[in-house]
Image (tube, rainbow, N blue to C red):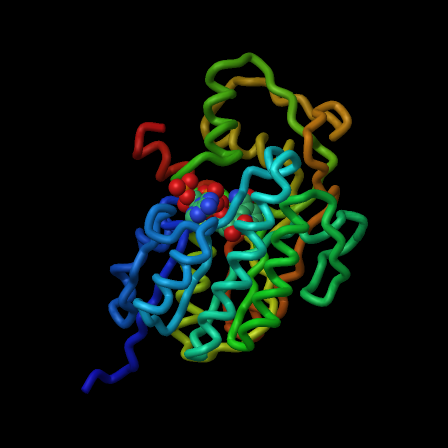
Length: 293
Ligand SMILES: NC(=O)c1ccc[n+]([C@@H]2O[C@H](COP(=O)([O-])OP(=O)(O)OC[C@H]3O[C@@H](n4cnc5c(N)ncnc54)[C@H](OP(=O)(O)O)[C@@H]3O)[C@@H](O)[C@H]2O)c1
């Protein structure tokens, strides 16, 4: 008999930033048998395929990372965004509730409107300012309503050595240009996807599943401009970074001006130690350098 119970875990969005971090750390967690699901294996716009997969493949824990994440494009594809981020999440939750399967739904700081002046805890009032945020918030509500064994993990400004993100975009732009303009009046905290995947595994290893909403990002506060300045420092770039207001960089989707989250609850309930954003950024940039990015 094994000393500890073993668990079957399915992870959606396995080709996304967070999904790939789970792929990377899966071998460090032998108690967990992972199944990684790509878009083709688990298409969120196909209810029949979702139901069929979940009926045929019982698991103990379902980590739902996949989502429609193109925040600006979402403004012109409302129906599609809600089908993928909201309806599919609700269906997954309903199906999983039949076997009391634990569901971990990854959500976003974009559920907030940015009018707060202090870090937002899990009870703070939500009021999304764009379609993506609204679809994720409705997804949260359905997940928590349809499956009592659900955790909603809100995170912010996610980046990784995988996929496309702010860090990789900045590195490329700083190489190509003499100067770049970056918004300096949106405050929040970056999250290294490797840290988030590690934190979620630490929570699962604790065998202590507490349903509800949790906030997770790296520690500390910054703006996109200061984030870019740190990337410049860590890559020895000579590019000039010019701070601009949001009004100087119009985008189809509005963003919250302030979305810093209070992480007290996740730290208290699970004893997590969360790295400062600068520490994790330095780690990720070292990884990228090793990959020749
Ligand atoms: N990125 C951020 O800054 C950020 C911030 C806060 C919260 N989040 C949340 O964190 C989670 C992970 O984000 P991420 O940055 O890892 O996202 P990502 O890199 O954009 O990956 C999203 C994944 O979802 C899959 N996907 C998209 N549409 C799909 C569909 N119709 N059917 C099935 N799969 C589909 C994609 O498949 P393909 O690989 O085939 O495209 C991809 O693997 C998401 O729930 C997101 O809402 C992200």
